[in-house]
Length: 279
Image 1 (cartoon, rainbow, N blue to C red):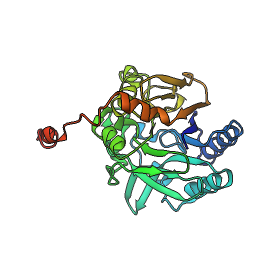
Image 2 (cartoon, rainbow, N blue to C red):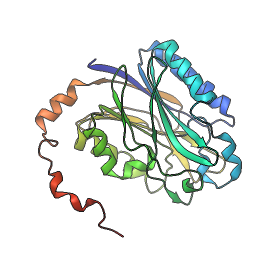
Image 3 (cartoon, one colour):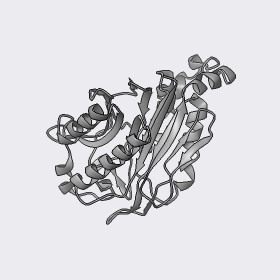
């Protein structure tokens, strides 16, 4: 398949897990009517962005991959024949937690998971209180409609993983996020288009909207798609819940890579100092 219709769900957090899941399903059902084949959700889509505070109560929201949320989303994917990029708070075993995104194929089968590798720990983003760093590497999932990579929120500040996803064959990289209106705002539309250009693939960046009770600022939405040339295809509003939809022509990846031979001209044998330079 060379053309894919994809959608990014940006939403305000509700107070209960059920409300968040039901709202997401309603967006999916609406998008199906518009031909959307691949849906991606915001980081920790079934909850408020709870790492804005450090409180043990939030551990009760965690679920295993065999839990109700992923099972529900698998049923939705199978029923409608769509791919779902589904970020959750994963309990891998007792007391072991990850910021995980499950990629569910159109058959309803779990294509695989990505566990967030780069874990921030600063005012309003206390993620190390909750999550272990990921141990799943940088996988690419060959789904019914395209080859998908996931790079979660804070990951986007690190170009190395974005490159590895491209080298592994990703055609579309989704970045589920929870990003507030502070110093990182200007980077939101800078870093990920740069990843798209450097690796000649599509990027879908998802952010939530609104103000949450204990968060450090306003989530400013503006979820967007950008193509392998760094051109914006569709962008959401700053404060409205919506499904941001774009058609993605996968042949543009081939065309762009013929024009800009970045992968041909790489010199990995000269990059050995990338690892281990700093203590």
